Amino acid sequence: MTAPPGLIEFDALSDARAVELLARCCSSTVWARRVAAGRPFRSADALYRTADEVLAALTESEVDAALAGHPRIGDRADNPSSAREQSAVASAGDDVRARLRAGNEAYEQKFGHVYLVCASGRSAHELLDVLHERLGNDAATERTILRSELAAINRIRLERLLDEIASGQLR
Image 1: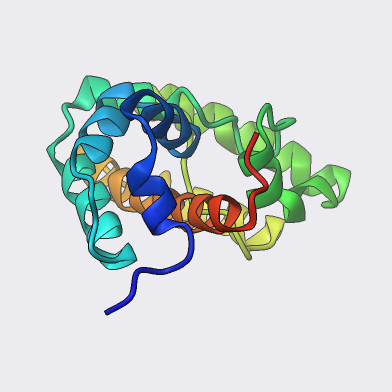
Image 2: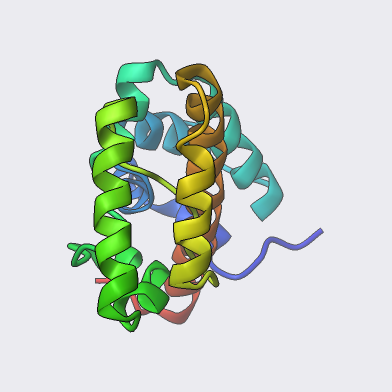
């Protein structure tokens, strides 16, 4: 089996550079270091599987560190990945954005952390519906969902990372 474009180059990076690039995917430095330590990967699936396994093993405080890299849904994104992922929200009407802001505040008061959802390909209305649904969860259920959403976001970002490495777009 041949490695996908970008994977061989990713595996050849210095540890420091690999961790730096992985930290763009997930703000937990523990996650980034542990995923980088799993190199070399035989396939993209092996990379994604390792990323998921490392995420599943993170302590709650490390998951919180990962959350710190995600802006509220509907807020101005402070990084290109979040801006791209939340692009549908940026064009939503003021009423939907106001409802998202209010929902985000209610969520944070209830759970103590930002509402995290894989926003790629989802409309602002859909994200608002998911937010309202998740507000009905208990804390343990929500942490399980949050980890699943974080894994989905990490996967999308890892795919994009390999594409950017392959195309020489990285800075």
